[in-house]
Image (cartoon, rainbow, N blue to C red; front, side):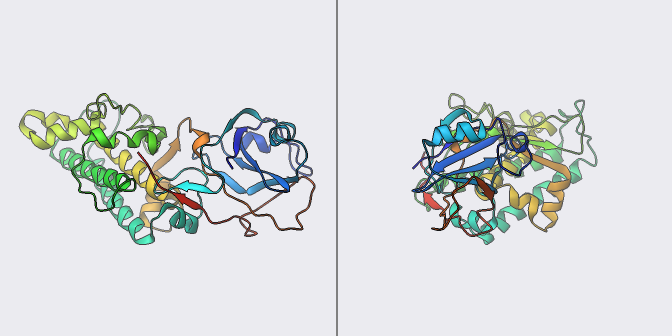
Length: 331
């Protein structure tokens, strides 16, 4: 069964404040044999879906009518994935807790730590570079040997992450002889165009969306930072100036995004590591105009004695959330 999603326009929960729908603008709903279930979600930032705000009521009438009457559901649409189903290797809102991320995305803690170490090295090198070049509008076209070095390192790691995600759709042992003609398919399938990264310490820096303009007609040239990497890597003499600071910042942002796709953004924020501290201090990760129909909605199994009135509770804390079913990633 596929759930529905919608915009919440009112709050009618008994005994609750009347503005839950203001901070939790999105709703996801489906029905069991006996009850209607609604889960609140955010409509900004990382579009977090919150099992801690699960609403249930015994079934009467249709699901759409219930969502409309109780939550003021507007712009009702069907979610792409079945309830409790996720796509292997592709994080979407709906996955939050560490144990369910490893279980559902087909990864493990060793792989995550390896990716975090590579990202940490990139960010340390960026921090050192920014001690000498202030990233304001006047300096973004600055280039030099250190920026070229970091651009090449960051883009080779992007290629490594592309390959890891791409392999989920094919043989795990596929050889790394793949071009951007194939990798560009990841933009739609992994929702790369939604992500944007803001470097918080620099007030004039706008959010960077390194994959937003990626297109199949020009799979290399439409990634200006990656195209510049190719040029300066193969011909430093003629293309030295392509190693601009703006391209370095985009390449680093691209690495953050690809890590989020494979392991979720929450580990970057919530782990007690040097990397997590740096991310919290310096970077904001957001989804821009997230496609809410692509989000993952947890399957909740209610006990037989579940009350029939309208109530809100934490389904995850009480152990009602079922294990995720992992579907194969396809391109």
